[in-house]
Structures are given as C-alpha cells and as structure tokens.
View 1 (cartoon, rainbow, N blue to C red):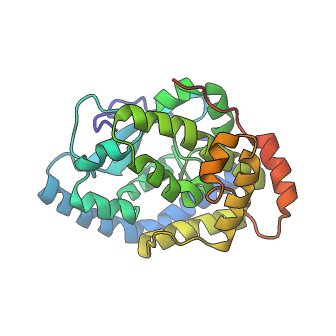
View 2 (tube, rainbow, N blue to C red):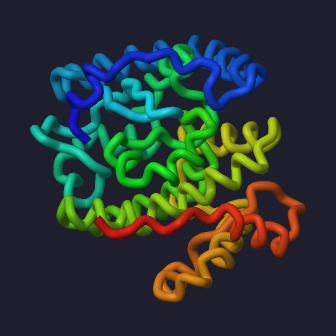
Length: 282
C-alpha cells in the first residue's frame, strides 16, 4: 500500500455509527488498560525503525468506515516507500518488506499504533477489517452490509482467515494477480465471516477473538488450528459447495462456526442466507 496514502485523509467523527454504547465503553476501557504496556513498546519500536529504516516511521493508510467515511489507519512502516503504490499486499511486494518488518507482521506489532484509532473512535477493538476505498468503490453493496459494524483492530475474519489469505497472496507475482486473487477469493470469504460475526456477536465471542489475537502477538505458530477454527472452516466449506470450481481447491481449508455448541446444519443455513454475491472480475 502507498505509504503516503491517507496522510491527507478526511478526519471525520465516526462515533455512534455501527457500535453500541456498551461496546464503545469496552473499547475505551481495554485500550486504556493496554496503553501503559503498549506505549513503551511502541516507543522502542519507533526508535529501532528510525535507526534501521529511516523516516517515515509510520504508515498512514486511507481506509473506509460506515457511510462512505474515511480515516487514516496508523501502522508502523514495514516496507520500503514506493510511488503510485496501491491495492492489497501480495508476493509482488514481498521484496519491499524489511527484515524487521517480517517480524513485526508475524507478531502483529505493526498494528499497535491502531490503539490511537480506537481511542479516537475510528476503530473498534473487534470488527471487520477496515477496507481500502478502491475495494469499497468496486463492491459497494457488499461493504454496505459488512460495514454496518464499525471496523476493528482485529476480528473473526482476521483470526480465522488471515493465515490462509497470506498463503493465497504470497504466490502472486504481479499487482494484477494480487488484485484478482484478493477480489475473487479473499474479499467474499472475509465478508462471509464478518456477516457471521454480525449475527453471533457477543461479549464471549469478542473476548475469544481478543485472546486469539494476543496469543499471536506473544506466540505466533504457523499452521496451528484450534477446534473452533476448524468448525468455522467446515461451515464455510458447506456454504461454498455451490461454487464447484473453488470448492475443489479449498474444500479442506475454509469454513467456520464462531461459537462451540452450534449445530453445523443451523450454521450452514445461516451461512447460505448471509453469503454475499461473488464480486465480478475487474
């Protein structure tokens, strides 16, 4: 993504959109609890990045929230600066990732500054990932449903699908390939999980997602799949059976029920109702 994108993003108040007062209070409380630990870590990381990579230390990306509003999503910069850069990050951008950037991404530490976005009211702790404007413009009906919830620092789609998304995009060698894979294979599946979260969200589910995210920070393990994640992927597999071409490739890797104890048939019916229309090729 372009490193100057979002530097001049319109700063708009997003409080009151896609979030309940109780969830907003929880976001502020958890963010304030995390800040005493996060601020020293961010200060050390900022100094190391300044010495090793130079300026800018932060990457501010223009992202969308509900009702077409935009805001600047704050991250530590993990890639070299490139002009006219846009779209999802895939294998075509792998050479630009700094050695320290790989480690920051593996532990999700590049996203620590997003606690500022949470305190501003631009992000929730838990919710769909804030999309790039270009994808919202291409798939407005889909994102109109997904962004009924305020975007989050992490979410169900993040903890369940992120590693598979990384594998799909890592083999892309051109920006065109990355964009095609992301639009056809990643956006619909992440949206499906986001819509499941909309219907099943609860305090317990939020705590589970937050715990899984913190576990990645302290102990990232590639290929580790929990019982709950396996259930999520089974449900998505059932929902995709109508797409026979993709089902053959991904039969063993997608699907989900976010809460234990829910009957698979019930989730399959729910997934069928929530499944977004497959985006057309661009």
